[in-house]
Length: 338
Image 1 (cartoon, rainbow, N blue to C red):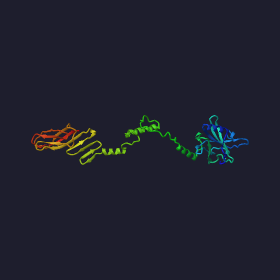
Image 2 (cartoon, helix red, strand yellow):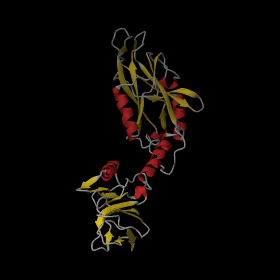
Image 3 (spheres, one colour):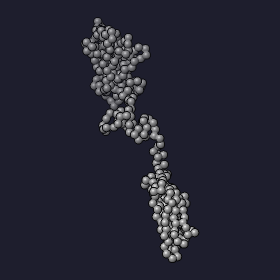
Image 4 (cartoon, rainbow, N blue to C red):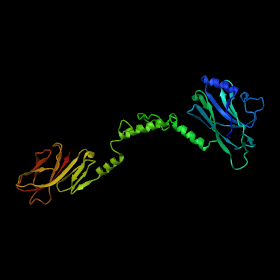
């Protein structure tokens, strides 16, 4: 349909155009196709509807052009068309704030194409555009018909228009408030995201949800696995995470670490020489001299009778054991404290 004459405003269209120039918004509502022929003495300007309407077309897209025009697009199709016709006239309808919907502009085709009825498996369709101009294209609106045939071109146009619209995703550009603690499972999306951000600050110990934790979970697990392991070096062992350590020997100790309040158990075997006494130096020093001491003879070390043992001179690092008879006894000792 390449033979459309120039589009002209109807009388009612001119009245509406004056209102638009004065500040009203031009709201285009639909397009209409017809097969009518203008008769002698009849003017297009006086029409209030097409001479012989055939099809209403929903507006599929509206685009503001750089040259001051507004491009209105639709699709002609014979889907559901029971009777074919020659497409001779095209009308543009708009909403007048005082008169309601009017025939705003009209044009005719001097060499019309025939649009056949739907009679085969193939549905015919053709995109076309009408260009409208006012002094301010921002005052032109179009009622987009959701049932209008959406061709690939219109879909791409809609996508591009949506993606370049600064306000298209305004509801997605929302501020996360990590001070908003969760109170319920059901909330707006932004509040739920804020609740999650709040929980992140609690987990990481940071004041801002965007700040990473001091250590990653993987690093923490690795450190825990390493620190909880019992490390042996000969007869000595350590458990770094618990602060525990020990020496498993004849003279040894176990430091139970912070998990048991710093409890230390030490033990050993000594022999008194020169019939006097001996200072027993322990592997670990206690905090003070309040620890407990246990001393006993080793079985089978005395030739005649049990030799009395006495303990004295107690300090955090050693204690003194003596005997009062002329023997050199061997004895076992143990201490308990922290």
